Image (cartoon, rainbow, N blue to C red; front, side, top):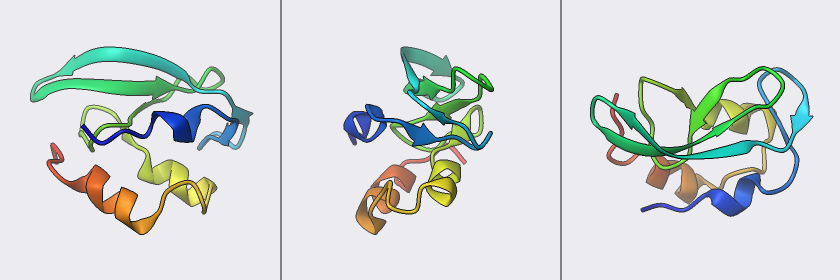
Length: 84
């Protein structure tokens, strides 16, 4: 599994424009499998951190708010095996 957990241990700017410590939720099921997700404590939006899935927001949205959050390789790995 592609591991991004450490990227979200510090404050990150969410799509709601607040800098937050995301909450982790393990083993959330969708129609295609199980995900590790993070949730913004302010706006309550959910983001998958293992792979893209239409059931949740993509962390690519967070990259737009935090330009140095992920490398190009990390974005490519995240997009592999997506549920889009």
